[in-house]
Each structure stands twice: as structure tokens, then as C-alpha cells.
Amino acid sequence: MAKEENKKPQEEQINQLQDWRKKIDDQVKQDLKDYFQERDYVVMAVPKEEPLRVWAVRATNTVRTAQRIHNLSPMAAAVMGRAIVGAILLSSLIKHGTNQKIALKIEGDGPIGYVYVEVDGKGRVRGMVKNPDVPLLTKEVNGKKKLDIAAAIGNGTLTVIKDLGMGKPYVGVVPLVSGEIAQDIAYYLAQSEQIPSAVGIGVKLDENGQIKVAGGWMVQEMGGTSEKALKVIEEAVQKLPPVSELLEQGKRPEDIALMIIPEELNPHLLGLKEIEYYCPCNEDMVKGVVAGLPQEEIDEIFKDNEYLEVKCHFCGKIYRYTKQEVDKIKEEAKQQMEQNKKDGETENGKDNPT
Ligand SMILES: [Zn+2]
Image (cartoon, rainbow, N blue to C red; front, side, top):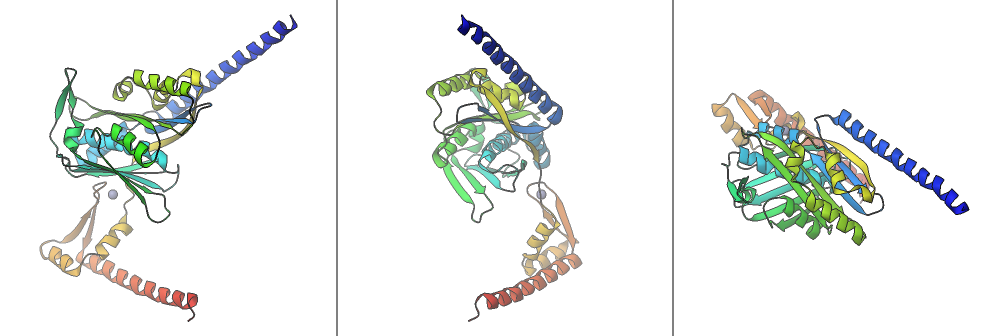
């Protein structure tokens, strides 16, 4: 009797606690919506007691910007869009909020040549593609016409370059196993990082060949997840509709992440990061390039042109210099080099008194 009486308030407490948790989660979702609105971002969610992580990203605006900057054909936009989402998911391997960088290069014998995308720890994305004019390539899947991403890329390799800001970057290369990018990234994570993963990426074009939605998700198993949890997640992933469909329905990254970690695993939203297309190129970097040009090449350019133009491959920005300005850049670089040499000599002198 006494036991019964004790049990009831306890159950009530648990129920209250769950209600309270639910309210907080709903509030978190509302806050995310209010804060990010239609901007791009990535969220991370984890089950309460399992070493498993889920990321979900919406990158529609970022891919649209890439399409505009590089004047991408619909096909090229679809391929680059997938690579952009893939690189954002891979940025889970670098430290959040830092200048660490991860680059993804997919190169094959298909008509696109290669696509290259960089993401830093602050969610800044930039990229380029060899052939931005690739014509539309389609295939039929279950009677439906679909973009043939693998045909645009062809046979080749996937390279990941991790620059952790500690000297030499780490480079990992794997052969392409599907050419559709999502599966290739999962293969890379398993082979090179020893992280069993599942990856889904979706990019959809509108009737004018412009990006309609772009996004993706990734599950990483960090070792030691229970059989039961793995089964639940596997089933959730199998049931998950294509990510482009979810985004079209207005689902947000946190919605997708929480579809992958069902309620019974007690999901928690942990990290988040805004994503945008941003190129940090600037005058100083370009001056460095100009200073390194051989004088004969510079003379050749000014034979027929009033300006020397340098175009950034990542953002299309054009930097322009007159002959006088180029001479000045060269002269300054020369002086700087001599100064460095002198500094080096004195430093060496201090370090090695012999
Ligand atoms: Zn740039």
C-alpha cells in the first residue's frame, strides 16, 4: 500500500519532467526558426545516452550563390550543390568556430572535370568547378527522370584535405564508389577516418534550372552504440524520405535531425553553425600573386592592355592594376624580401653564435 502511494508522485514527477523537456525542445525549435529564418545552417543532434551523432544542413542559399557566381548550368549546379553539402557535412571533422579548413575535391573522367569546395570552421564556403557549362545528363530510375550526377563526374577519386592550422594539411584519397557523392563521402569516412557513417544529400532544380533546395544529413557512429539504438536509427534512416523532398515541404535541419533520432532515444539538439558562401580573397593576397609574376609576362600583358587583371576563381572578383601600380607592387615586394633576408640573418646570428 505504502509502495503504491510512493510510486504515484514519482510517475507524476517523471511526466512533468518530460512535459518540461518537450516545452524546452519546442522552444529551441522556435528560437532556431526565429533566428535563422530562411538562412542556411547546420545542426548537430545526439541521442542522450548513445555515442552517435547526427548532422543536418540546409544549404539552399549557399548553392544558389555558387550557381550565380560561377554561372553554372543546371547540371553543374546540381553537381556542385551536392559537393557543397558534402563538404559542409565533412566540416564536422574540423573545430567549430576556428579558421581550420576542410576541402573536398571530386575529380573524374566525366564532362564536369572536377569540382572543388572549401569550408572553414566558421561555416564559410567557397568553391569552383572545371566545366560550368556541362549539359543536362539524365537517367531513368523507377520510371522517373533523374539527374545523372555519376555520369557528369565519371570514374575518378574523392580527395579530402584537412588543414588544422598545424603545418602540413592531412590529405586522404579514395576511389569514387558511386559518383553520386553522398555514398562516396560515407565510404571516405569509413576508409580514411574509420567512422562508420550514413550520408544523404539532395539538390533539386526548379523548372528554370535554378536551385530550388539543397541540403543533407549525416549519421556518425563513434563506437560503442548499443545494438538496439543502431537498429532504431537504421530504421529511421530507411524510412526517411529524400532530403530534397523534406526541404521542399519546409522541413528545417532540426526537423530532419530529429526524424533520424526518434523520441525513444531522447534526442538533444547540441551544436549549430550558420553557413554562407564567402570568399576571403583580398588585395594583399592578389598583390602577392602579382609580385610573383615573371617580368616578361607582365611586359607581354601591358603590350596590348591598359590593365593587368586578376580574377579570383572562387568568387569571380576582378582585381585591376595599371602598369605603374604593378611596378610599385613589384618594388615593394623586392624591398620586403631584402628586409626579410636581413632579419633572417640577424636572427640566425642570434640563434647560432658560431
Ligand atoms: Zn575571391
